[in-house]
Structure formats: structure tokens, C-alpha cells
Length: 565
Image (cartoon, rainbow, N blue to C red; front, side, top):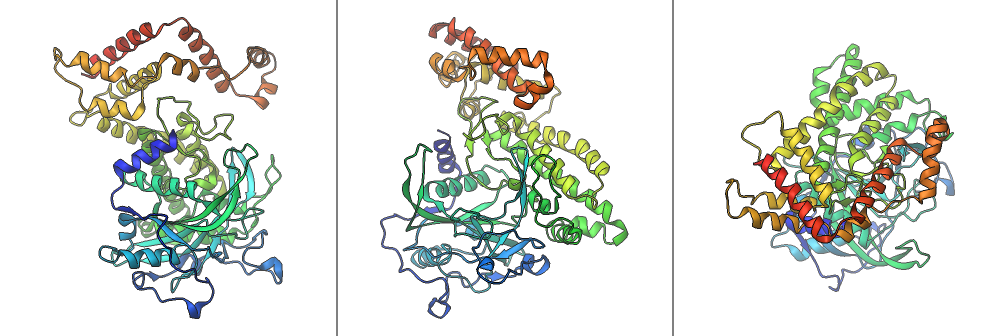
């Protein structure tokens, strides 16, 4: 359902996306490395690469022999990038191109559709390299589900280079799914058609919804296949290898600064560049100078570096807070909010097991692997704040911990609440006068949605046609339409079904009271409270008839609408 919602949002929001039939005859395959045989680009000839990241940050000198091959898995110490090589695909062909995203690069396909299709299939599959492109894989680490995982890196994505445009902008281009890199470990570095379409659609939909995000310029599939167990049920099948062209000012992330982390006290894992403080300073200078030039300009002297770094961290906090506020306002769930999936410039990055809310459920989890609900919808703001704290730790001593902690406490919650309430006011049409009670009104709206099982997106859409006159004859009809978007009794009973066996819940309650330290190792008070709430809700629902539920829902919505009016 979540993927259908993403497609629905895309169809409503995405402008300038065109697709091509998968059955269309593809261009002939071309070896990625037979440079003399590669045709010179025409439609893409205007792209001018200036790969600043590879000039200003250390690139690995690979070890000799097979261990140093572009795709040989290995630790990459003392470097931010490792040279990579896209693996060619059989018969690549375009699935879709985003006109609005490619226009950022100065590309316009009107009147040149056939040429654009042919070149996109060739160059955006990785089968040929554009002049000036320098494929590389980025080295980073990450905290995954709260635990430090050590070196991760671009295991299925490749930096192509940075394109400078006539508008004075700089866009990093990436190919996601282009084959193995030194960071692929035992994986194949490939992505398949279904996940690539999801990323393409969602990143473009999010942009047109006003959410800070990376962009997707192209989706190219092929006749090459890899084996995937789609439903994790022991029935693997062959799926088409597919590549997405991703675009952003930079794909550097919080985890990029964790490559210097010493051995973690819990996992024992360390970053590959422990002790290389010189590279951390180099990365800070690069990121601030390239993507926060106003902060660099305000602190030009070496003696001012701590203040510069604090100002930079404050701005990262604010951007991250605004980003996650936007997520909450459109019902977006990221699903994998690890530190390696947090952009250093405040963009939504790495669309994996994401989802969108249908029925409003603050505890909605879109990732089937997230058993504890760490990355549930309602917890996204606190997790982003936790990730910012890990970024601050990674920036020590260039960013003193006490100054970072003070900045985080001063900036994040207030910026999140300010932006969230501003956006929610806009969604509710409360744009003329801001009132002190607006925050409480929004909170009661969400509680009413939760109690009645209302559809998140459809509720806001319907409220745009709410009759404001107190005695309007259309009010009863509006209430009927609104409550028709609520979940049925059976759907609610299923949604609030307890996740624990009653005996297990009883044992957890006793353990929480008798041995809190042991309980903390296997559960949390929040999870226990949610389970108790499920039991209570289930008990109430079992005593209701469908007619009683409908009557209760109408009453709750009538009360909130009276306050809203």
C-alpha cells in the first residue's frame, strides 16, 4: 500500500517526467571501456565536469595486485573516495527521465527525444563514460539501528563527477546500481527495476511536494539480471538490473565523518581512518567552503575555526529539523534513519524501504526489519536529533562537545516545532492569523485521526472543502464523506491487535517492575506502553458494533470541526 501511495503522489505531483515503453527496441550495447569505440555525446555534450571532491579530498591509492582491483572488497583507510568502474549492462534502455531534474543540468529533450533516449541509455547505465566523468565510490561509516557498524561506503552507488551549470550551480551525479565497488562486501552492487522505480518516483514526488531531497534524473533498466528473494520466503527469482541517475549538491553524509571513529565500546568496530584528524579537518574545510560558503566567509581567519564549526553545526541542525518536519507533514516514513543515510546538507537521501501513511498511525513502521519500531513515523524527529548528536561526536575535537550539545538543545526542537507548525497551519488554511492554540488544534486533529482510523492524506484534502458557515446544510454531508475515509471496525481491530502473547506481556510487566536493568536490555518502557495501549484499544473495539463506531467517529469529528471552525 505504501508503494501505491508513493506512485499516487508521484502521479499528482511530478511535472516533467516522461517514460518510454519497455518493449521498445534498445540501443546496441557498448563496452564501457572501449573508449575508441564510444560515440561522442551530442545531447549530453554540454555537461561540464569539475570534480572538486576528488581534487580536495583524499582518494585511495589501491594496494597492488587483485586486492586493489576497482571492485575488490577491502578496507579503505586514509581516503574519502576509491576509484570505481561501472559494470556494463546488456541492452540498456530508458524507463523514465525527469525533465525537471535534467533541466537543472541544462538538458532539454524537447524535439530531441530519440537522441536523449539513446544517450541516456548508454551513459546513465554506466555502459559508457561522459567526457570528464571520474567514477568513484565514497567511503563512510554509520550507526545502524543505534549500533556502530564500522566501514560501509557506496556499495551500490558510484560518484560520476560534478557538473557545473550555466546558472552557477554544481550538481554531483551518481549512478545507483552500477555494479560492485570496494564497499560492496559480498553483494553485487546492483539494484533491480522495482526498487529503482520506487526511488525515481519518490524522490521526484518529494521534490514537487516541497520536501528537501536528492533528485532522480533517469531510470535505465536492462536485460542483465540478478537473483533476488523478493518476499524473503526462500523463492528467489531473476530480476532486471536497473540504474538510477541521482543528483544532489553532494552525497556526503553524517557517516562520512565517522570513518575516524575508534573502536566502539559496544560493537568493537572502528572506522578505517582512526587517528587521521588531518583528513577530518580537510573534510570540514571542504564541506563548509563548498556548501556553506556564507559561514566560511563569516569566519575567514584560522583563529576563528571553532566558531565557524559551531555555526556550521547549527545550520546542519536547522536544515535537518526542517527536513524531518516536512516529512511529518506529508506522512513520509524513511525507514532506515541510520547516520549513513543523513545528508550533510539536509536532504532526504537513500530511498529504501520508505512508505507513506495511509491510516494515520503515529507508530507506523514501514521497514519490516525494524522490529523494535526505532524508525517509526512518530520517532523520526528524535532519531534525527540522535543522529545529529553522533555527528557532533564525530566532529570532535574540531567541534567541542559542550558547544555542540548546547547548539543541539538550543536549535533542534525549536526549529522543528516552528517549521512543523508553520507547515501544518498552511495545510489547514490557517494562514491569516497565527494563534497560540494552533499547536493544540493540530495535536487534537492527529489524535482524532488516530482514534477514528482516518486516512492522513485524504483528510487534509477533504478539509479544503469544509463548509465554514455554522448552519451550513452541507455539514452533515461533509461529515459523512469525512467518516467514509476512516477505517472499518475490522480494520481497526486488526490494526490494534496486540503484538505480544498475553503471557509474554505479563512477564515483561513483572520484569520491568522487578529488574529494570535487565528489562532495559530486552525492551523499552515506550514499547511496553504502546503494547498496553493496543490491549486497551482492542478491548474497547471488541465491545463496539459497526454502527456504534460510525456514530462515535461522527461525534469525534464534529467536536474537532467545531473547534476548527
